[in-house]
Length: 300
Image (cartoon, rainbow, N blue to C red):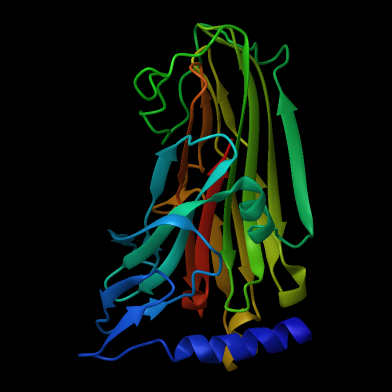
């Protein structure tokens, strides 16, 4: 009950940030002055970041009213987490304001902590999927073509090296409750020319205390000499989220790894040179979905 009361209060406060034509504000959460055209909704940053930048991303409207957008990047420094937070959303123009920066990996892990219930699964190289094989199977439909092992210039891996990577994508509500989350961990070993061994874990989380349920969650992967790529996708829903906030009936949805209605997954790929690649295709839809903001983080 206390969590629902916090959500109602936070939702009312967030509603005050929905601005009309001709107004402008200074978006203090992102540290940038942003023109506030009709339809913009702003979300607080919610954590301290260094090296902050803010950008506007143009999404792609879908017939169902979903605004789809994606983001991607590569590995950073050891012990430093890259964080990307949705601090503004315009459902009318399908534009998203993303504020990014860096934090310590431990601080990001604390801010990203999701509330169980959850399910998790771990996989490792085995006889059915030989590690480091030089003739990989065909890529699954919709897989990105830029998951090569080239990586940044000069990023050659030393012989027999062990590597790790982590990605967290989640949606949070106005009370800073992580309502749903999809997490990925990978570990891989290289010998200088091939990925010789690997293991990975995926975890789906949803906040039952505010009515969220998991509808599905899958854990596909692709392994080859050049990389180990995991690309899970999942879906969640809540039939009371908007009713608690505003007394409006309907269902709210979160989808991870979805692009134009197709489940393609959020990639976390470890490469033979020791670098990793990440991307996410996560969308929110249904009633009151604008109350939710998306948060991404990744680190070694």
